[in-house]
Image (cartoon, rainbow, N blue to C red):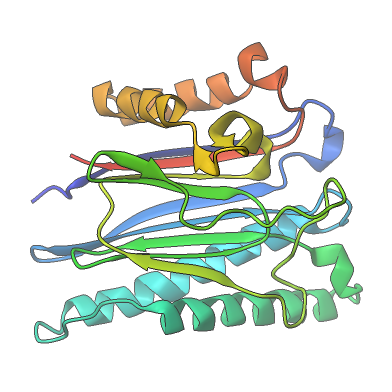
Length: 252
């Protein structure tokens, strides 16, 4: 039985990154057990000023995805369990990701500041949408035909300053709501295109336009290549020279 989610994601390096390459990381998974399933999307943006920011982003995405998928697989088998995921699970997942980065920095003998990275995580079940975010970037979702950004990214008074998963006692922004019909997770390189800062809402035509392309595609590999090409195109690069990552998912 095919899953009910259609997904695509890509992460591309900014044109000035050189040997450091892309410091964004993204993962999209659909976890299934019989007729029950859950969508898991993780995204992280390594700090440009951090020597190991890309390594931190990849480690955060991997650890969060592994932890969520492992626990969801077990819970999906418990037919009497009414709640598959909650806000406490999100907090514990971010805590585990931070601990992994701290250990990695210690193993390499690095100051923790050299492993700075943001983190975004979305879990959608048949019962709820659970979101968590630390740092910039955005999670946009569509419910009942309307696009929203339930967690508005924290914008510091100084440009390019944000919160990282590695920051001790950093606040974790969370959201619990009804199941989403579609989602976009993006790093801060796309924020200016996707978010309307004056209205405090995402640009619905942009969100609907990119999701429509996902809906029309029948070749997932071609769609991923096309997404990466588009993210590297002049249409995007005239607005941002940062690394860019975007994950999309929609109900079939």
